[in-house]
Amino acid sequence: MKYAVIATDYDGTLATQGTVDEATLAALKRYRQAGGRLLLVTGRQLDELFQVFAHGHLFEAIVAENGAVLYRPDQGTAQLLAEPLPPVLIDILVAQGVGPISQGHVVVATWEPHGETVEHTVRELELAATVIRNKKAVMVLPQGINKASGLAVALAELGVGPEQVVGVGDAENDRSLLAASGLGVAVGNAVPELKTLADRVMTGDRGAGVQELIDWLLTEVYSSPNG
Image 1 (spheres, rainbow, N blue to C red):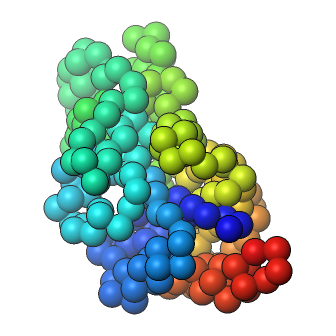
Image 2: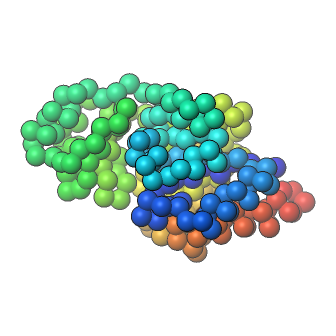
């Protein structure tokens, strides 16, 4: 089965204002019924995700915190894929008036217009960390941790190669996800730079774009002689 896995972002891709509509959920279920497997790859922290999304069971695994945490819905267990950032980072950011700040198991996140302050602080502390943008969100993660690194761990557990993956996203932090996938897809509302990187750009925005992708896979790719 070509493209046996869809690895999708959550906010702005599956979800609109934090919520996944019924038509998009139905499309995910159709893909699973056809033999496809689903991975959710999100910048959200797990507790934030579970407050708005009750359908994690549709996914083989959830890569959270932009690649820093792997959650297995069938087991209800979470695995850290990196060491947490030092508490001094938050202390200094708060002292500089940065806020609000959220802290996950690993990620430290805030919002613009604090991006430059965050980058300066990371440099001053000489942290082995990377500042990643997600539209107006600003995330700090250990060096080498991103959606691609988290995806690689999830795929290794599934025994699936990256060439079998369709990566779907909408924002700057999805660049590594698309680059690490056999087919990189941007939904219609994606930022221009992601559309430039994508192998395929859907016309529909957010969930409608994911529905369009799944319909294309089921009707044109899987039904073809080489599908």
